Image 1 (cartoon, rainbow, N blue to C red):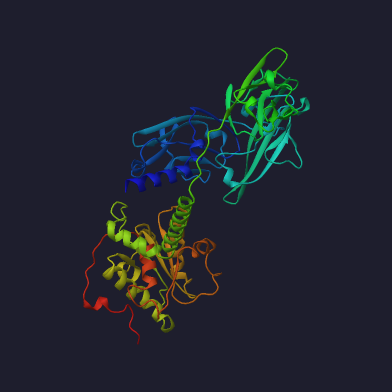
Image 2: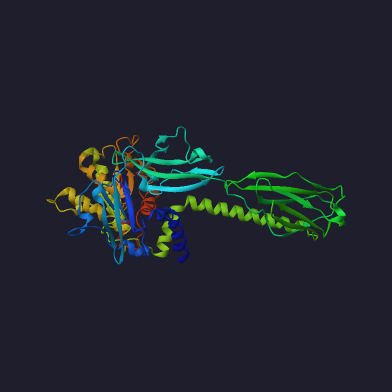
Length: 538
């Protein structure tokens, strides 16, 4: 159990690591009028404390703090740890305060007016110095809004750069100096907004003279075999006019088997030069052993030297043939076993998960504060042609899931007292449920169930508080009558009811349904009638 929790924690951190970079940690913040803006607080509290603590956002007014959750402004959105402005206006300047239990944080927000007749505001400019002939790179990326951006345009001195690729990359020239503005276009609630980011690029002269430095250890011991060839590679970081050369031992200067290659060099993205020179030694003999081959990198005022020492490689013992064969057989057998286990795991994934739940006694319903395990949404029109569908929703599902498997369902006709406000009652019941089971047919999308579907989709896709299970009671060839958001979930959580194959409690249909339901360690009561098939053919 402990190892599983560690792996889950690592998996979650992989997804939230980038979001932590968008936290607003500075006390004094400046925003530009008319642009989307956000304040984000990152908590250091444990995850289980975050779930049970109420989050509040306040703005300090002249008469005292004002709870922003009580305001109904379409511009200002509260998303737990984030306060968003769509867009921010001049009168939004002031002090903002975040509170979550004992965790608090405040910011001083200063909204400045947009500069007229200019594409950027000088108070929101980032300065950057680049040496001439070095790499000039401008990456138009926004850590927080990047997923909402549908188009990005780069301007230089408020003139659009045509055919620009992101990131903008070239070798710097003096004419490249100026103001570069990234304009991000994003949509929110059907409206188009833009966010700007401006860099003041200053091009300066070349100050890149460095002391040449050879790469690797000062003494490099190289294992060689007699009669074989070898190449010694000497590499260094140096200036454009610096050189690399080799010193061979005295008794090897006239050796025809020793050849010094030409120097090659490439320029790095930082503007430095990476150079190398190879020394080739053919048909190594005893005169080459224990000799030091020196490589030197030299500039106008300094040098750096390293040595290559050739040592005789010790004889290696070959692996006996029978040992190698046995090893290969064991490796093949283990590989086949792993493939078989993975295949079995994929095929019987549902059965393995259900066995694990039963063996470990897992129960996901103890601490979530919800009343029902599932809200059943179905066609309420009890007409003769819909009789089987209605009976399946109000009789078969409760009989199996409640009496046989111990779940608690919410069925509108059974659990709601007549006379109340149906819309409010439905929304409240869905909020109290862990799953939304939709008994789907061609006649499902009637006016009576449309609100159940819309409320469930809001909980599933926006609030992330409920999961949807689709049961295709009768074949539905065309799903075009469904909302687009529901069709996106169709391929992941849809079960097909087959009356001739889904009768038994151990059928694949009921196993898949229990797999999609929350894990629950309840021992249901049974009587003799409950071991009979689920539906009786008439």
